[in-house]
Image (cartoon, rainbow, N blue to C red; front, side, top):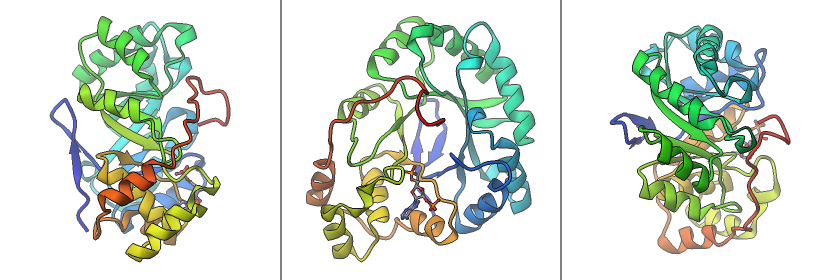
Amino acid sequence: MTIPSVQMNDGRKIPQIGLGTWPLKDHDAPAVMVTAIEAGYRHIDTAFRYGNQIGVGQGIRDSGIAREELFITSKLDGEFQGDDKAVAGLDACLRQLGMEYVDLLLIHWPMPARDQYVSTWQTFERLQASGKVRSIGVSNFKPAHLDHLRAYTTVVPATNQIQLSPRITRADHVAYDNAHGIVTVSWSPLGQGSDLLKDPVLARIAAHHGKTPAQIVLRWNIELGLVPIPKSANKQRIAENIDIFDFALSAADIAALSALDTGAEERVDSDVNGH
Ligand code: A2P
């Protein structure tokens, strides 16, 4: 199976689907990594905050795959914002993962009340030059945060990872990202265990294509040029979620899925569930 890639604004490419790893923990991450890599995943999304990077790194080594075959994303949250704290944060991630570099490092949450994401990003720009991180991006940034960042810094984030599903389409954010050459990555693309996957519109489209509701949601991401990172710890669902490159949705399917949007508000701080 060949997984398509999306071009980022720094000239590098990101595989268009990845494995989300929250809320896996160190003890269960290794087996899940081996399963996912055997199933064909080459893009793994983790974060310092998840507390699973030792297990993720272990599982990647257990799989036997060459490091350069993989695209690994990590994220630094509030404790690494401001001054040069991101330097120590990246070193901690690399130590936990047992890696020389990550492919993509993100500011996990803007935390605008702290007003430190601009200086943190300036540190990220230096880290990119160091070679310990190939691409740099942000997560959970609204257009206003990106406007502020762009006004004071040089490098435009390669990606913005936001919560996004047919119920939370963030069309204005995606349009902003597209206009500025920022790849949008969808976290919790399957609705994070909500009843999204039971939606009758989804069931109708799934039956038509002979696919599962989860596959339809993930394919909708692909059609929109998004990069979904579904999480699963289950072997069958891990394989199911990546088996989405042998069919296409019609324009009517895409519109019907996008119309499921509820306009739900987005958080800007990591205040609810540890993600
Ligand atoms: P599990 O790990 O047991 O598969 P999200 O990525 O939107 O946060 O969703 C993750 C949740 O969705 C997890 O509870 C995961 O459970 C479940 N899940 C993952 N893949 C599928 C699938 N193909 N069908 C149904 N549920 C899924």
